[in-house]
Length: 297
Image 1 (cartoon, rainbow, N blue to C red):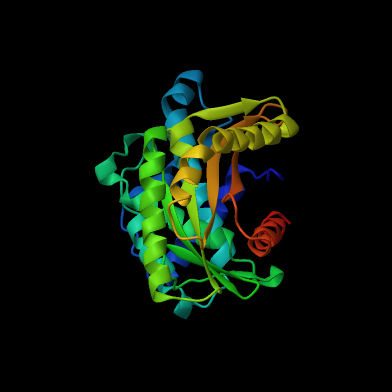
Image 2 (cartoon, rainbow, N blue to C red):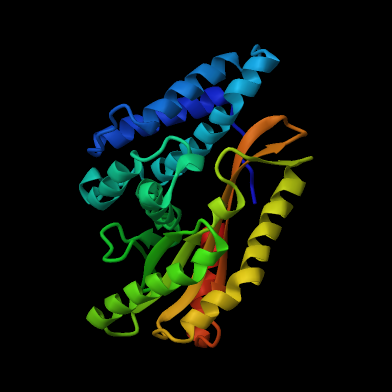
């Protein structure tokens, strides 16, 4: 996994571009959390070198939380900025909802989680949009998002998980939603995936993953993803066994703010793991392996 390195000034510049792009596709930003993140980053990019220890202790948790959220919006912008605005109505609607909600993820409750839930849907769409490599997001999907790949339509239902106890309930709900889609869309060209963001199980939003160097950080992130799958795959495999055979896999996503001590700079890291359903056909297994290869290239 490549860990990008940017100065805070460069991140601020890209975030300004992201804000302008969201405005251009019809997202009304107001003075909610996106404006707060802009203000926090604008201050920190100019003052982080000279800030006193007391000021750093006071401001740093908010900065970590803000820059974590900023990177989520940046990922969507970088992937979709070249897409015609006329085809982005669904993404714009998700982002309009995503710019609301509590400023800090740690202040989120079940009643105020909708904003970041919609943001996750847009993030998955952005991750899957690589037209030059033969994979594109279905931007007007009938599910939370969709992926077009090798003449197949992969409908994706996205759920953010805040506790291990919520995994089964959310996988079951997502599977039921996919089954509803299959009832309306018959044929082998339609398949289903469940995507889980488990980041909040691991980190409320203002914590830091600290490792000595990039190599150790990359290894740790991969190990965390593998551990999540190993510890919980029995839960979703049990649900899948009861559900439509067109549901072929589960995607796990984690994201962190981290520090690679050798570089002494905050970095945003994310990882995706795919856990195929037990007993799927050879053709669907090959399809998933090809998709993973493309997305990781």
